[in-house]
Amino acid sequence: MSQKKSFVIRIDNDTYKALEKWAADEFRSVNGQIEWILSQKLKETGRVKESASKTNNKKNL
Image 1: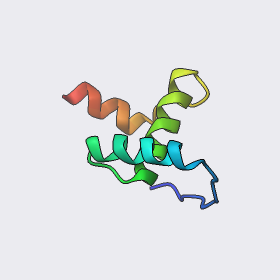
Image 2: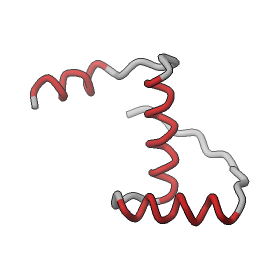
Image 3: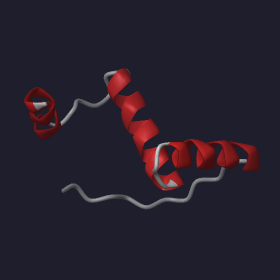
């Protein structure tokens, strides 16, 4: 498992409330939701590739 980097993020209250609602709708924490959003966008724009294990898991479904 890869190590995670901690950092502070400052966002306005309305954005946080929207993220909090979205996260709750998908049974994630706000932190988990932000990680998921960033991960999806990085993959979508071709800035990172899916790991081999995740790709293999999708093939097995």
